Image (tube, rainbow, N blue to C red):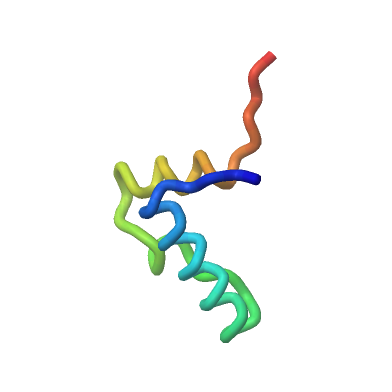
Length: 51
């Protein structure tokens, strides 16, 4: 099972709740300001591409 940092868990929880309530995921602008948070979110969404 994957383990997330507390911050990643909060983002994932927010996305899940938003999607459950509205039927579609939130826009990136509704999640976080560009910067560190965006990179963390991208790391969760992007599969590892190690060769």
